Length: 366
Image (cartoon, rainbow, N blue to C red; front, side, top):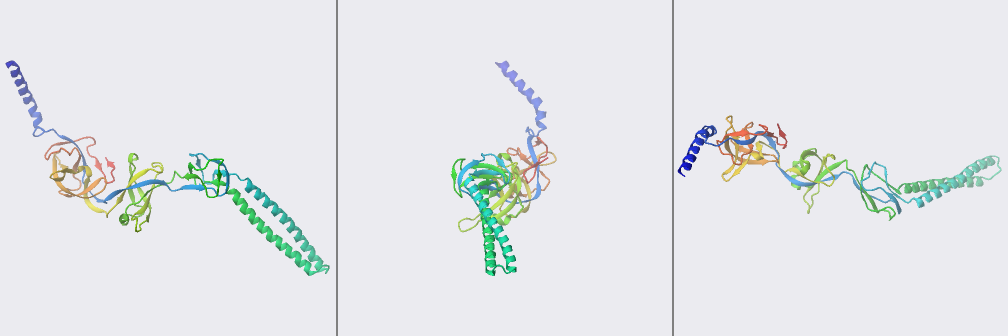
């Protein structure tokens, strides 16, 4: 038993003799803390808040029947069409018969008009030879004008009938995709019945309705941050803004152009809307702030790779950066990863890419 205690004591003393020099070089026996750093910057920050938005198509139409009758054909959901393509067709039989009737009527009137024109010329020659009365000439001229008027009316009615016949086919007012069929082939439709829904998937925009008090801080073409979840965060320009404010509603509507290759119609997103004017500040990434019971601070890394704690006061901020006041200068390096348990005076070791500069846009610049 005594030999075992003696052996353990000897091993402990041997380990201490070997490890002491290695621990000493780390200062107080604490090894360098692995950290990631970023740069203190001087920039303009705009305070923002997130509002809900929805991706919609700029062209989304419910196409209705302009004639009544039996629906003969309709395209299936998912079919892509070009502008002017036929989407649905209503039985045109009655309309076609009406067109043929008016065409026959026009032929009859034209035949009578040709006869009266020839008769009027003959009456003129007889009148010059005083072989007919002026009354007969005037009567023929009057019949000719009546026939000309009847021909104009008949042609107008024919144009209306041809227009009605053309409207028996529902055509695409823009290029898009059939997304919904509300009536099936074989059913009877009346004028005004919604038959099909057409949507343009290639021209999309985000619509959001922030509080009206934020409208003065926005201008057309301002680029706002849009958070699309798994699709990432990007910036898109404001296309238009319209006030919707009244005694019950205190919002305005803004629309942002977005890329249809990234978004899908109906998708829910978040939009960062400015809530105040931009301010020039000294800023650090949000992850650089250390919140402890004795206040807010950041850890600055000096030339000897030693962490130095600096107390700061947080000010305006956006999604990625916060303006701070304290003993900080632009260009200094602050810890953004590994600062939770970091102690003042502790040695650090930068891991990964040794200097990762996270810009105010939230995109890492290496």
